[in-house]
Amino acid sequence: MSFLKEEQYMSKAKKTVVEQASTEEKIKAAAKKLFTQKGFAATRTRDIAEEAGINLALLNYYFRSKQKLYDIIMIENFRQFIQGLSSNVFDDKTSIEEKIEKVVIAYIDFLTLNPNLPLFIINEIKGNPSKIAAQINEEVSPMRSYFLKQLQEAGKAGKIAAIDPFHFIANLIGMTVFPFISKPLLQRVTNANDEQFHAFMQERKKLVPIWIKAILNTPIPK
Picture 1 (tube, rainbow, N blue to C red):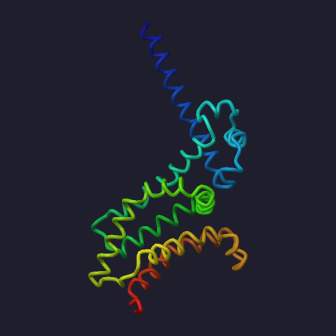
Picture 2: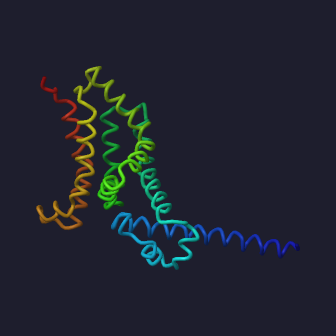
Picture 3: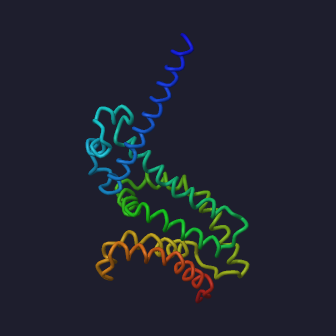
């Protein structure tokens, strides 16, 4: 093979790899949008192909089944979210209070970009609890263990109230995640439009850490 032909072959091969990557990303972006909006059962592979702007045969070429594509999307969603939190949680130089601030900001920023994700996860857990729970546990277990250990040690040292980790996590998730789940109801009750809701959630980046710190500094009645 001459140098010119070899160069043309390499150029064509690189172009093919780029095109394949681009097609895969289009499919995954379309699948993520439809899965989070409609759920697994209500989303057809034909819908995903139309959303991605490709034919169904091409989708089946890249991803052999809807289940395989769904599993990939679920794992990528969790990992994207967890990677944004893990750097804050595993930082042994920051206090519980500092971690709370960073975690709340990371939660709200991520869910602002993916507002349908919490309700989607809840629905899928209800539909297939064992499989989804296993995936979640595998991803978050190390981070959860480290954070709860630090929380318990701070409670024993008297730096914070000795709160049960269940209540702490429930408060943290409730204050940050629940507004996104209940957005339609909250907007109707408060007569807030999308722009105002976004402003409220940005404000909660400052308010939620204040509220949680107040809880941690409140003695638990015996």
